[in-house]
Image (tube, rainbow over all chains, first blue to last red; front, side, top):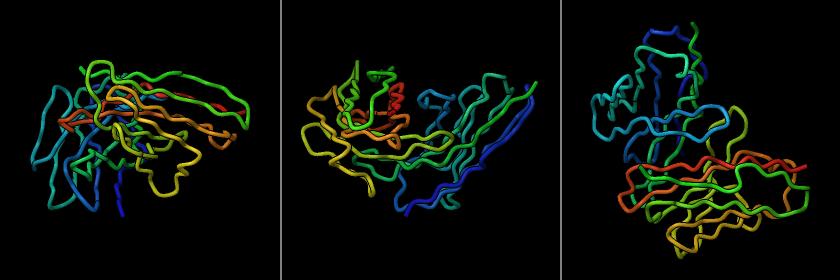
Length: 111
Length: 115
C-alpha cells in the first residue's frame, strides 16, 4: 500500500518561515512533488525532487531524504497569498507517471 | 508552459442523468491523462489512468461502468459520469503528462453538483 503523511493544518505569520513535512512509505519511488492548491482551484506545481538534497526556487525550497522517506517544503518571507493547501505527492510509477497524493496541509498565514 | 483545459468548469445535473467532462492538452501531446476526484477538504483521489488509444486503468473501488473514460486522441480525454447520483457531487480534476513524464499538468477542474 501507499502511505503519505503530512500535518493537517499549520499557521504562520506574514514574513516568517514555515516548514511543511512529508513522510512517505510507498511501493515505488520515482520522485516527489509539492503542489500548491487554493480552495476551489486545481493544484499548481511547486517543486520536484528525485535525488537527495535541497532544491531552491525563489521563496520556496524542497528537501528530500530517500533513505528516511522524508521531504519538507520550506516557504520563506511568507505572504498572505501563500495561504493554501500544500500537497505532497510521490510518483510511484515511472512508465505512466502515476502519483499518490498526501492529504495536504492547510497553511494559514496571519498578519 | 503546458496548458490543460477542462470543460465545463461547473455543471449541475439531475439525479439519473449522465454528464461528460472534457480534458484537453492545448499545446502538447498528452500520452497519459489522469482523472482525480476531490471531496471538500480532502486530497486528490486518483480514479483512473488513461492512455491514448487504449482502455483506461481504474483504481480499486472505482466503477468503470459508471465512470466511462475515453482517450481518443493525444490531446483529448473525456470522463462520463453515468446515472449520476448526489454522492457523485465532487470536484473532478484531470491532469496530463507528455512523453517526458516529468510532471503532471493539471486542468482547472470541474465542479459537479447532482441534485
